[in-house]
Image (tube, rainbow, N blue to C red; front, side, top):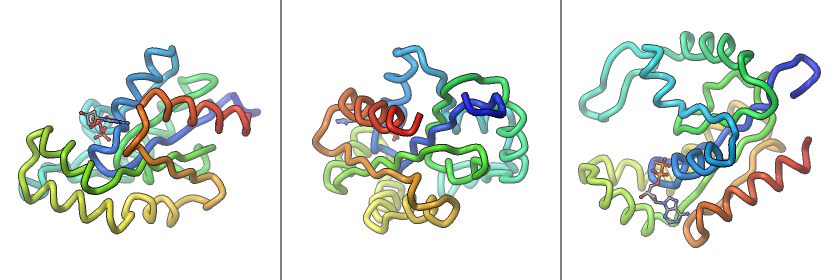
Amino acid sequence: MNENNAPLVILISGTPGVGKTTIGTLLKKKGYSVIALNDFILFNGLYYGYDHFRGSVILDVEFLKKELRTQIINYSNLLFIEGHTTEYVPKQLVSLIFVIKCNPRILRKRLIARGYLKRKIEENIQAEIMEECLLRHRENFPEKIIIELDSSDIKPEEIVNEIMKSIDNIS
Ligand code: DAT
């Protein structure tokens, strides 16, 4: 916890399929608080509607930011927020960001296994190649708090260990 009694907020982001949910589940099993941002958005109705072409919700960004500010103070110590659109978490709240990456060939296999439509797979592969998630976070947060981790060849448990080591270094 920091001096304002707000929790230390850690973002875990990346293109769909890189392993965010898996990491979040492992962190929860270890007893940490984890917000899955997609679930948070749906549960709190923080969207205008659904984009059928893109297969995703149309976010109400200002409402999302407001709701995060309100709800984050209910947590103590360490809070992980995992999701594809974590760049919308208000900058002042965030201590560290992990952008998980994955080799596009491996990512494609994961997305095929998930049953995504071909168009959606290619859109996500393109986003991974162009490092879109990383760039969006770089636009919104200082570079020094962003850490890239590659999930292509290491187990989710090892990624969690890397994350915890980095957090130990800042707290
Ligand atoms: P995301 O939440 O980023 O969309 P996920 O956690 O649902 O991704 O993982 C997508 C798939 O990839 C799922 O079948 C689990 C698998 N996976 C996740 N991390 C992995 C890793 N480090 N090594 C191998 N497979 C992984």
